[in-house]
Image (cartoon, rainbow, N blue to C red):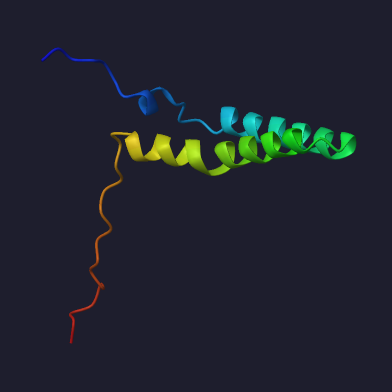
Length: 80
């Protein structure tokens, strides 16, 4: 079976800049929708904020191959 390439979530950036920009755009669109009393603009702003703050960063972290090493659970004493 041929390799179909990387999954789409692997294309997401791992730096916070694009997610912050997406959240700020969501706030601007939501505020504009509130000022003009346009419900679909408010909804679009809320969706952009939730994508930038939670969903896309979560997808980027779940698909990254870099896992931190497990935490050593030693207590540092003799265990008595």
